[in-house]
Image (tube, rainbow, N blue to C red; front, side, top):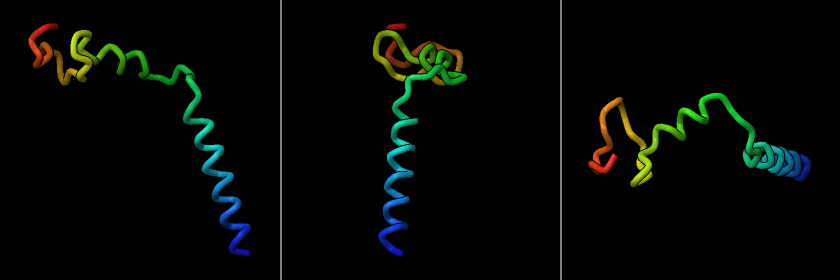
Length: 55
């Protein structure tokens, strides 16, 4: 019985891993990509300039 539970858990984790690796256009993905600074790659919070001062 315990081996069945462990096996189902591992299969479930493998399926979740496969879905996580998909490069599907999820909503909000472009918005997250545009929120990064093009120079240093850090996320910008708010509408102001990046703290690195380059962009």
